[in-house]
Image (cartoon, rainbow, N blue to C red; front, side):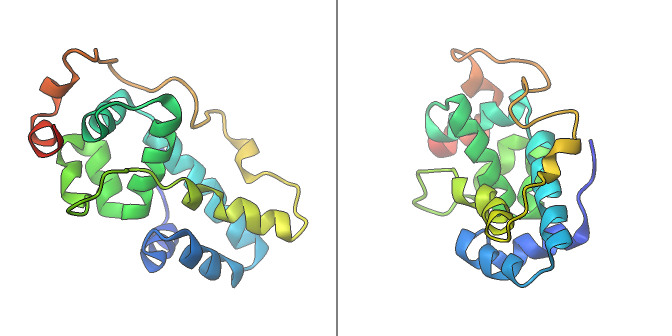
Length: 161
């Protein structure tokens, strides 16, 4: 698993996970920096592509398709480095990053900001093309069963079940 840079997390933190704020921040950066951000965002999605994290999202939302899982990972990234590290270490603790009445745990727009900026600058090179894995590969780890997934995440089941 490739680590992510301090600059990446500073950018996410400064944006507060808001796609519009992220756009303002990245618009002010040079193209190589935007490309580096895109590579790292993609790597974060790959690192979070694990059955245990999908299971946590399933419990939080009461069910989760593969597309929803993809955007759930963007939600985790948008919540910042602590949420990301919590998801990787013990996803049953992700409930602490949810807002009180939050029902949708996705942040699709966050993922596409850097792509839109590169496109607006006429850049056709995709910084994700140098990776062997993709965020949509089969998740790593032990697959869970829908009938027992709530038992795997008792804190989340109590909070969201």
